Image 1: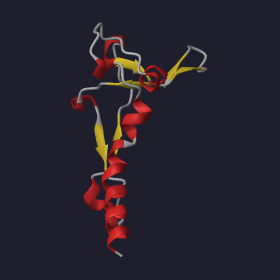
Image 2 (image 1 turned 90 degrees about the vertical axis):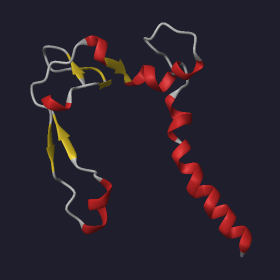
Image 3 (image 1 turned 45 degrees about the vertical axis):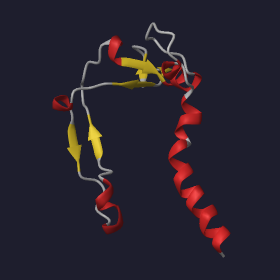
Length: 99
């Protein structure tokens, strides 16, 4: 999250931070979730240069700061976010068809 000097919200961003500047906190202690690796990454007082950030709004709209005409850099995020759901949905459909 990017804020002004007064702490007011400016923008939500995705950023690239070297792992050496972060620490991993083991926060998923339930037996069923241990295998997912879904722990918490914490980065305190880390400076992230502008060239390592992209606005969440830009990602959602498919706007890229990379000067290119390649389609893969201009695809909105929302349709791509649903791709991991296709496998389970196809499996459910296949199982239902076999009933």
